[in-house]
Image 1 (cartoon, rainbow, N blue to C red):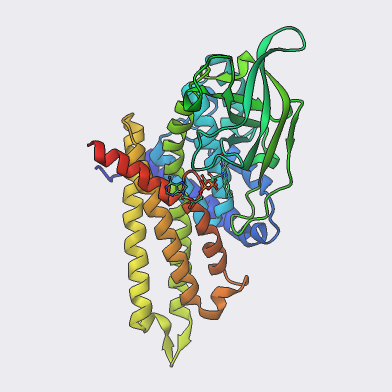
Image 2 (image 1 turned 30 degrees about the horizontal axis):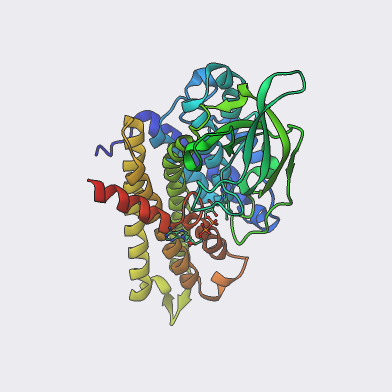
Length: 388
Ligand SMILES: Cc1cc2nc3c(=O)[nH]c(=O)nc-3n(C[C@H](O)[C@H](O)[C@H](O)COP(=O)(O)OP(=O)(O)OC[C@H]3O[C@@H](n4cnc5c(N)ncnc54)[C@H](O)[C@@H]3O)c2cc1C
């Protein structure tokens, strides 16, 4: 694997690092404390070309690659994991499937403003009874005629934990299509582009979360929502393929988010260890603290290598389900270990809001859960390696 970053990738990383340090980091504690959607930072990320990093310029994107996306997302998540996931959902879970599976008209109408940051997207696969078992969809799309006689679908159901749900303009939505006689199970799953202002769409109150509190998520209720056929994303019955291909890319994004959180925990703890004195010397002089920092640094580098490998595979257009699952599994567990040790290095100060360690600890946990839990990543990896 060639680890030499191109000039373009280095430039994307540099711009993101400066933005993260100067504009995101100073607000991260306040965003978390107030559970605030950082609307102004999302607008700035649009201006910087970060809302559609790997989308071609002709569709409003930055025209960069997945490696650049990973580098940008790590920098932003290092400053604020909430801002990181807002970016990750828009890029990986909304722009990417519309680019891959959308038709030209959909790309012009929806992808371009999403990639430019003029619209914000969300991705609604999970339901109260369909999380890890994503194919157990209960949301139903039935063929129907629209108000002016056009062909389409009427959709009913509930979606759960939808990141960006309360603030999104557009949703990539999954449901079970229900024409009589069709296959059931994952072969009936169908995806749509859902404008969030469609009559019958209602969002619940924002979820009250342990971490990533600046990222708003909620339930979405769909009551007799009519969508014309022109909003089908791909074909009827292709939705499971859309979802799985999207999550293969999305998991690389969550690995990058986890890397950012792990790095924040490590860098903040390292700085603190040099300042805090016990028994007449900085705690960094105690071997037990040094070992913690050494393990954190080593594991974060290993996680980054796995993440860049998965991103490189995606950029080469080769199958990357296993590599993405490995990167997400490892990076999320590394982030949690780093965040736990970070709190320990801060001692009592690690347990209070005045210092960032407890935020990293709370933010890290979600990376082991969304876009497939660690258990599900192990299933994906096992199924791939047993076939090799
Ligand atoms: C903050 C947040 C944001 C989210 N954002 C989104 C979003 O934007 N869009 C979206 O669609 N979803 C989103 N989700 C949903 C998320 O992807 C699911 O919560 C996740 O996939 C797990 O599903 P579940 O919660 O139903 O857990 P369950 O599937 O009920 O799993 C419960 C436990 O059982 C384990 N388990 C389940 N099946 C197996 C198995 N076969 N073998 C071994 N262990 C198993 C799981 O690993 C887990 O530990 C979000 C969730 C949260 C909390």
